[in-house]
Length: 450
Ligand SMILES: Cc1ncc(COP(=O)(O)O)c(C=O)c1O
Image (cartoon, rainbow, N blue to C red):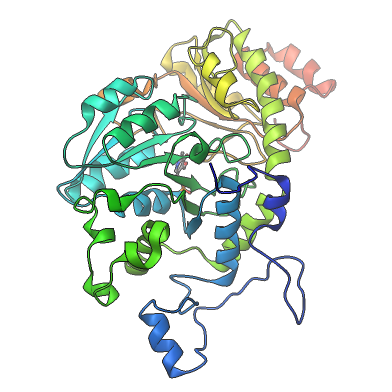
């Protein structure tokens, strides 16, 4: 791409979007914990409210701490701009609502995070937005799902919970042939492993709650605009961007903002009207997490390799759904597009009766039973009963989630401790062997009541 973008750099994750300013020259991004801003004068207030002059008016639509985070995430992904939101769920909703309205249609991957499926099949259905699900492994299925009313494609770069990958350039081609933008949820990969805009996507969304923040403390989301999709090519498809609007004094967003028009719409309409705004303090937490993103992601990846190797060789495990396992159907794709690894959130199937799942999970000590991923801590979940419990049996089948599927988010602990924890839970030792194991410290760590 001819943006002069140097690609993901560790320098950008520490410096992009912020330059210390006089008088204090605070080295960390200051937390501007304010609801609003004093206008220098009446004329400025008028012109900022009319969106003719840039500037912060009210923290619901913009804040200096949040803006530093937005610019940093945009830089890491090679986008023209980003919008931060209170949660990842809000980021997905705002990204799609800015493209599709009642009576229109979205094509989405059949292998998505359950909360996104709830949004698409329930709340968007209430709004009259229709959704077709297509297998991310078959770009032709996406082509077949396109309708005249289609306004967006949505997929996840690494699917939650089965770590499904896809040929993104092929799906981008289908989207662009249909004249619609491709939105990619890059939550599980992060720009440290994968940059969807470089592979043909137009818009990237995140739950920054996960690896971007990385410490399991703070909810946040982001929408990144690649600025490449030319909405003016299809003016009648996107009246919200290409037609004059009373809301903007009769102006056309595309004429005012050019390739920044999509994000201007998302901010000035959806963030403004619905209000899912990120708090400045939360933005500072995510900024701090971002500073170590690449080294954390590398360590998550190393630990995942150890855990996957162990699980793949265990007789109590029926299948491991991670592209690094031998003969995985997307191993080639992983080698081509994920040279630094295909992430640390994946699933495996127990070779057991579904009734055994609860006992297995309750035997784990280090892997915490938590409805989250992308924490420093290792986490476990049972998608069928938890994150994906509202999917219909057909949707769950299409997602490849069985009743015995267990999702792991591999953390930053010592890999041997994680393997030992899984080993004990998979093959519970006899009472006397358990006492021996504790005596030699095989069950880390003290104080867990294990
Ligand atoms: C891939 C993906 N997208 C979006 C979300 C929603 O993010 P949040 O929980 O921050 O609202 C999640 C949450 O688990 C997720 O895994």
